[in-house]
Length: 211
Image 1 (spheres, rainbow, N blue to C red):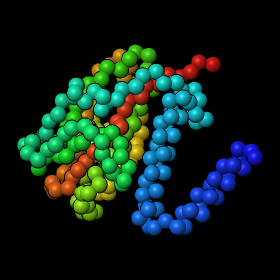
Image 2 (cartoon, rainbow, N blue to C red):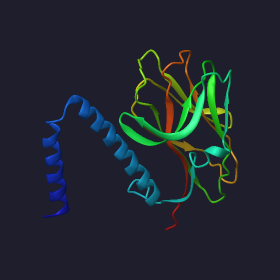
Image 3 (cartoon, rainbow, N blue to C red):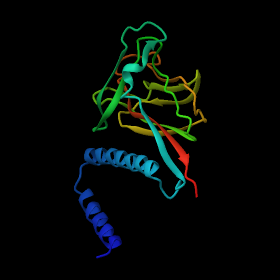
Image 4 (cartoon, rainbow, N blue to C red):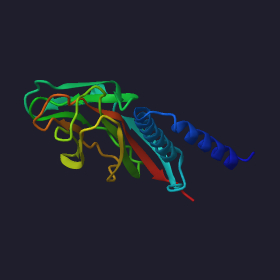
């Protein structure tokens, strides 16, 4: 049996099993598949893939590992704010995360100042966002997620669902610099159930492979 034949048989077997799952289980399976795809994308970027075979990773910065070096603050009163690291379950998928429940008013801000090595040619920020399972959510009560680089907003998202969403943000060439990177959450006026988390946030530095 060839690899192609085995792969098709495996897919056919999985499809047959899907018909026996409840809608709730199918929703959970969809979230897990999204997580697996995210893992594969990360791995391909590290070892190289067909889309970017010329890239080679030379540096990695894990924001969770460096959490003790980050500053934590609120733009208003810190009342109601909770910032820490720990496992977080969103859409039935558990992953390491930064917990960042925003304050009653204003933003919660976690600020890092990593030094980018001189040999980094391409810089990417990778992360997931979620709202922990158990939160009671609605479309008219979202959480605001934002990222600022040296004081300028480079990414933002409103979220009102639990499941993880995965993102890759290309950053400018910052080799040899020590930029200020801020992870921000905002309750947007309604504080309850804003159990915001950042899943596995990392900076990845690449160089172009020589011929």
